Each structure stands twice: as C-alpha cells, then as structure tokens.
Image 1: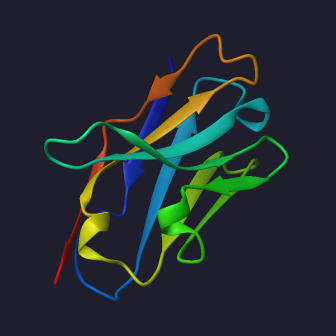
Image 2 (image 1 turned 90 degrees about the horizontal axis):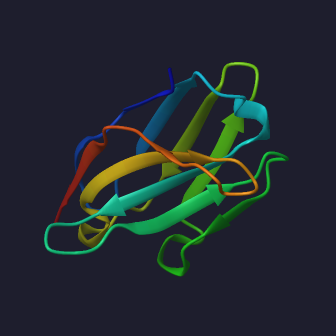
Length: 117
C-alpha cells in the first residue's frame, strides 16, 4: 500500500522559513521521481519542485533561490526547505511520486502553508 505522509506545514510571517517533509512507503522510493505541488484557493495545482532518483532537483521559477528540495533514499523521505517565504507561497502543499516512465502517480494528503504579510 502506497503512502505519502506530509508534515511541517503551518503559519509563518513573510520572510520566514518552513521545512516540509514527506515520508514514503509502499513503492521503490529510490527509483521514483519525487515532487512537491501546491494549490492556492481558486487556483490549479502547480508543480513547485521535482527531484530525480539521482538527486537532481528542478524548481518553479518563482521559488528558485528560496526553496531547496532534497531526498534521503535510505529513510525514504523528501524535504522541501522553504526560505524567504512570501504571501503568494500560501497554499496546500502536496507530495507526489512517480516512476520515470510516468505510468502511475501517487499523492499525499497535503499540508497547509500560510504566509502572512
């Protein structure tokens, strides 16, 4: 049974930091791409960051230089370190996993991030 469990969300003032974690189980974690998406009220879900099985990360332009995504293949976790947070970073953040051939995809339940101005 695949499980993706996010944690670390909360309320923070603009300029602050949060670390989101995603604990994974039930699939071959080390060979899967891991991603963080976010969805603000009234908006579509958007890709924030993705990390390959080898650890190469790519970011949405708006978070480059502020967010860092990492993974630990032994602990089967991925972390999104978010610095210099802005009100526009507010939203529900979701962990996502998929194999390289993208034949399946799994979602976590989400964790809320609220950045106050």
